[in-house]
Length: 64
Image 1 (cartoon, rainbow, N blue to C red):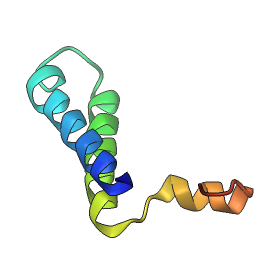
Image 2 (tube, rainbow, N blue to C red; image 1 turned 180 degrees about the vertical axis):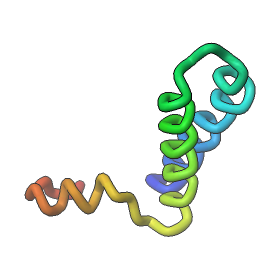
Image 3 (cartoon, rainbow, N blue to C red; image 1 turned 90 degrees about the vertical axis):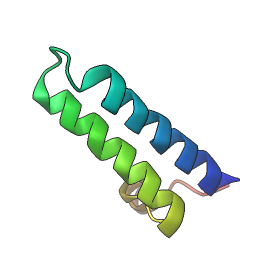
């Protein structure tokens, strides 16, 4: 369930980037950030590794 949610989230972010924001007047940083987030979500669905999760573990936040 968790991996399917990550994959769905990443795919939808990528669709928004490709069809909505790519050619718009949004600053290049936000376009790059959205692209990074979408690709990170997709890879996380397959590898079960996310940089933010590693940070949360170091901060002591427990997993469900």
